[in-house]
Image 1 (cartoon, rainbow, N blue to C red):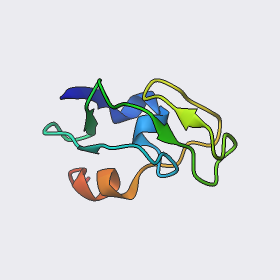
Image 2 (tube, one colour):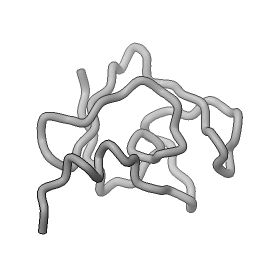
Image 3 (cartoon, rainbow, N blue to C red):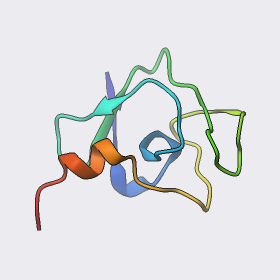
Image 4 (cartoon, rainbow, N blue to C red):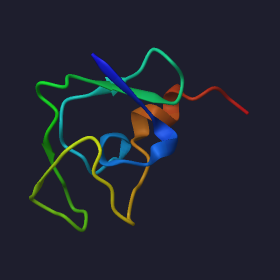
Length: 73
């Protein structure tokens, strides 16, 4: 599994990304399989197109599972 930090605000950590992923072992990170790293944009500006973990757009919204995994301030 590969990890990417949440603060990069890429498709991988967006609630609109439909690919396979899970919250990372480090708070504020997402883990994914580099061999299966594409997912559709769902209801975002790229709706219906396959997006990779490094893609980004101006309408990023944090994935709820990451928000729940962040430590309390």
